[in-house]
Structure formats: structure tokens, C-alpha cells
Length: 332
Ligand code: PHB
Ligand code: FE
Image (cartoon, rainbow, N blue to C red; front, side):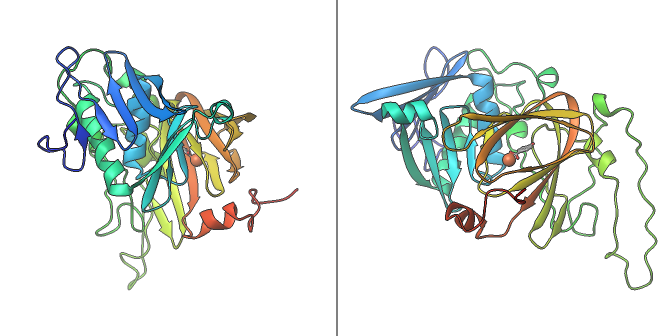
């Protein structure tokens, strides 16, 4: 391992493997390697090196979300074993720490890193492990394969960040309406008209409207909420969903889902143990509050539109964790 490989500042990586072509990466006590089919994560626990494997495509889709979302709110479980917890400035990497069986066996491990260090390592892994033709943001029907020995790369795909509007897309100086992107094959029936805006003199550039359905019909990514309206700490984060949410997101606050079209089924589990708690079918028009003490993963059998409503009030994680706020928005 050396950390002087060109372009990998702050990242500890091996030379490319002569057989697979992929580098091995080290982040503190954790080691990440991949072969043609699998990503393997190793960590020390109880005096031995433990290991866990994921299908390379699932691993890359999960890691891509963690990078694009800046580690998001709370927990990003790549699967039942590994994941990250955001402390907003520092990030925990863990294996088995939120899995009841790993905890009981004492083979879990958790280590905290400054955000720039773990971010640089995850970005370097994506850069090295995503092959030409594979887009970790795309639905399986819309991308090539993640598998095989190393062949090329896909920098344009992995350098997408989520669109974060300051007020609303299309306003002067704000994020664009993305009219340049084609309408997705599964949203061919979505009307493409924009609303007419007639502002009174003096309100030009203040009063604004756009068609959210048109906007979403042209999204080229899945399971990647963008921020499309910002009103103080209230963030509307709509997204288009197809296949599965590549992570099991553990909430550090309540968040709301409004199903805008089609259907998503959610698996909901205990945030700490992973024990299943609920399975929810949401059809167009349904609204659900996701409590602050759960993790969830969504399944969308065709591309659908979902509005995620986030509360960005800075001290919320502490207030939920201390029990000051109940995990549900309403007590029935
Ligand atoms: C969530 O974890 O709340 C979440 C993440 C990404 C999505 C939708 C929901 O696309
Ligand atoms: Fe969530």
C-alpha cells in the first residue's frame, strides 16, 4: 500500500492488481478490494480479519449514492452489514455495527473519519472500480454491466452530483430546468407544457413556477433526490425511481414521502438491529411519514416519481437521539 499514487492524495491504495486490474484501497482499519464479480470489505474484530462480500454492481450503486449525497442524513447502509453514519463533519464507517447478529457475536467494527478523507477514498474507489459502460445512477435496463476485469472508466457518470437548488429551478441564477435532457422512455405520456407566469410589475424574478412533472420526466438518474424548492429549512427533494433504492437509509429525523406517480413498495426495519418492522405499498397520491428510528429501502417496478420532504433544521439529529422529540410526527 502506498499513498503517493498520482491523483490519489489522502487515499491509500495499492498498485493495480496484475490479474483483475483493480486497486485495493485502505481506509483506517478497513480494506476494500474487488474482482470481476464482487466487492470485498475486510476489518479486524476479535483478533481476526473478518470479511464481507457484495455484488460489485450493488456495492457501486450504494457507494455512488453516499458520495453524491455527501453521506446524507444519518445512516447509509450499503446492505445489512456495511455502511456509513454521518456526523456532519465526521463520518463513521462500520461493519456489522447495526446488525443484531454481528453485534451479538462481537464481530462488528466502527471507525470515524474526517469527512474529506472518507469522501476522497470513496471517490477514488468509484473512479477505479466503475468500468466503461456502467452507470451506477441508471436503472438496470438503461446501463451496461458493472462486472468483469477492469476495462475503461465512466468519469462523467460518477462525477454527477445531485442538483441542489437555492430557491427553485429556472429562477435567475438558480439551477436549470434541464430541458436539454430527453424525456425518459417510461414518462412518454407526461405533458410537457410549462405554466404561464404573469408577474405584477416589481415581482418579476420573484414569482416563479415550473412543471415538476416535466422536470422529473427528464431526469437521467434514479434514486437520487434533487433539491427543487428551498423554503427556510423545508426542502422538497423529488426523484425518479426504478428498480431498488441501492441503500437502506437509516433516518436521523422524520422525513415525508409523497408518491407523485405509479407505485413504490417500502421495506421498513429497525434502525439499530435491522429487524423488519413494516412493508408499505404507496400508490400515486399516498403520503407517509418515515419515523426517525427506522431504516428503509424502496422497490419501484417501473419508473415512478417520488417527492421526499426533508427538514434541514441543524440540531434535529441530537434532539431525536436524546429523546427530546418522539420518533413519530404524530402520536395516535
Ligand atoms: C430516502 O432514503 O429517504 C431516499 C433516498 C433516495 C431516494 C428516495 C428516498 O431516491
Ligand atoms: Fe430516507
